[in-house]
Length: 138
Image 1 (cartoon, rainbow, N blue to C red):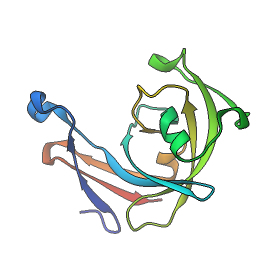
Image 2 (cartoon, rainbow, N blue to C red):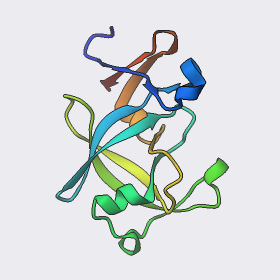
Image 3 (cartoon, one colour):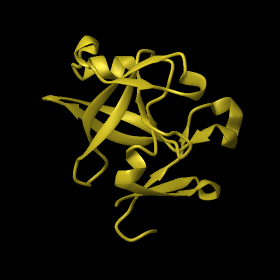
Image 4 (tube, rainbow, N blue to C red):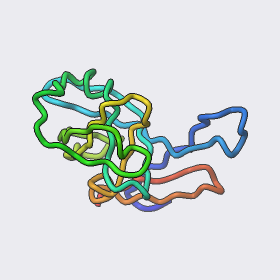
């Protein structure tokens, strides 16, 4: 184990796929103003930005029309409207950090933790063969 890191197991997301259905979902708490919600986020080293599903933003009390920063998503989400939303994110026992999200106006996307700015705040170590991954603040 990496010193100072927390270890998490891969999560079975598709039982029919057996070991191929395991994904590294990370439990974390997101906070906006005074509202918090516990979620599972997918650390995605190929994602440029953090992506927040629409319903999670609503659960946090965010109002779509009050978010004025338009974010252009790419890839499979290129046609999805998104707005910038800054949240406080808490992973395990680590101090909370500010995470910038592209709040997508769809619910069909997992909560993605991408390069900007999850991987700027945390280092991640994946051991797919062991079915675990480790997260450590920068």
